[in-house]
Amino acid sequence: MLDQHSQVAHAFGVMDIPTTYLIDKQGLIVRQAVGGRDYDSPAIRQTIEALMR
Image 1 (cartoon, rainbow, N blue to C red):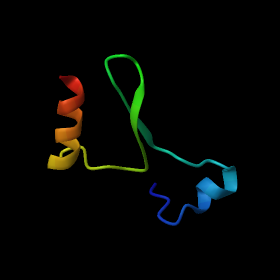
Image 2 (spheres, rainbow, N blue to C red):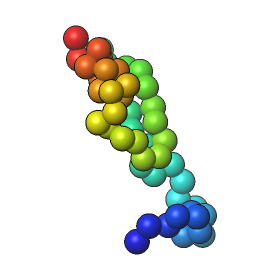
Image 3 (cartoon, rainbow, N blue to C red):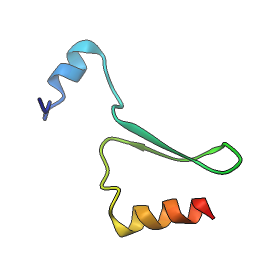
Protein backbone atom coordinates (compact mmCIF):
# COMPACT_ATOMS: atom_id res chain seq x y z
CA MET A 1 0.00 0.00 0.00
CA LEU A 2 1.10 3.53 -0.65
CA ASP A 3 1.41 5.62 2.51
CA GLN A 4 0.67 8.89 0.71
CA HIS A 5 0.69 11.03 3.84
CA SER A 6 3.45 9.09 5.67
CA GLN A 7 1.13 8.20 8.54
CA VAL A 8 2.47 4.66 8.88
CA ALA A 9 6.06 5.80 8.48
CA HIS A 10 5.64 8.32 11.28
CA ALA A 11 3.81 5.83 13.52
CA PHE A 12 6.70 3.37 13.29
CA GLY A 13 9.51 5.93 13.18
CA VAL A 14 10.55 4.90 9.68
CA MET A 15 11.97 7.77 7.66
CA ASP A 16 14.09 8.25 4.59
CA ILE A 17 12.87 5.26 2.62
CA PRO A 18 13.89 4.84 -0.07
CA THR A 19 17.30 6.45 0.06
CA THR A 20 19.59 6.12 -2.93
CA TYR A 21 23.34 6.57 -2.83
CA LEU A 22 25.57 7.09 -5.86
CA ILE A 23 29.07 5.86 -5.16
CA ASP A 24 32.05 6.81 -7.32
CA LYS A 25 34.92 4.55 -8.41
CA GLN A 26 36.84 5.35 -5.23
CA GLY A 27 33.94 4.17 -3.10
CA LEU A 28 32.90 7.64 -1.97
CA ILE A 29 29.27 8.71 -1.74
CA VAL A 30 28.93 11.52 -4.28
CA ARG A 31 25.14 11.91 -4.33
CA GLN A 32 22.33 11.02 -1.97
CA ALA A 33 18.63 11.14 -2.78
CA VAL A 34 15.92 10.65 -0.20
CA GLY A 35 12.59 9.55 -1.58
CA GLY A 36 11.52 8.13 -4.89
CA ARG A 37 13.15 9.29 -8.10
CA ASP A 38 12.56 8.85 -11.81
CA TYR A 39 15.80 7.15 -12.78
CA ASP A 40 14.91 7.39 -16.46
CA SER A 41 14.97 11.19 -16.41
CA PRO A 42 17.69 12.71 -18.61
CA ALA A 43 19.26 14.66 -15.71
CA ILE A 44 19.67 11.63 -13.46
CA ARG A 45 20.87 9.40 -16.32
CA GLN A 46 23.47 12.04 -17.22
CA THR A 47 24.73 12.18 -13.62
CA ILE A 48 25.00 8.39 -13.37
CA GLU A 49 26.72 8.09 -16.75
CA ALA A 50 29.24 10.79 -15.78
CA LEU A 51 30.11 8.89 -12.60
CA MET A 52 30.67 5.72 -14.58
CA ARG A 53 33.45 7.33 -16.66
